[in-house]
Image (cartoon, rainbow, N blue to C red; front, side, top):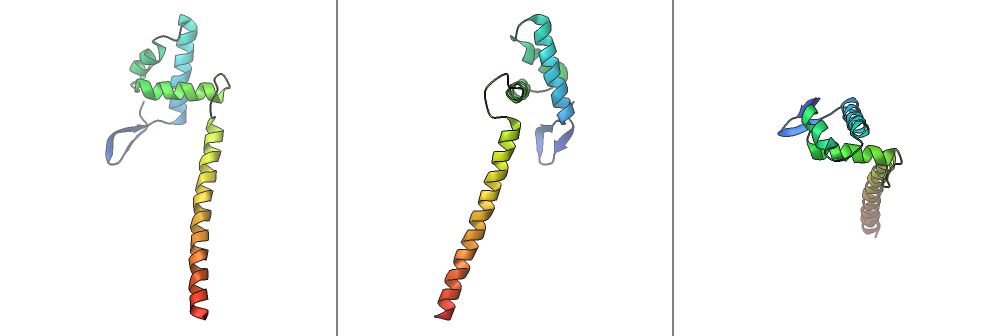
Length: 109
């Protein structure tokens, strides 16, 4: 099921969105068939060759995204990440402008 290997990190595996969705669907289906949550993630993880904690995180995030459980959705998390990046860029630009202003004030005096 691994999609690609990350260079320099032989134990890090990347999974496509389709693979993640398939695994989450398998967990949901097994839970429905068994009528319990107990042991379902581990069983599916073993079948698909995915780490159980990795799969557990995917299932948890899918439940949050579906509104089943409270938490920060994937869309909200991406928006926060974008805003934080924009904030870093603006701080960097402000620092450059501050230094340029100080330099030109020094040069013109």
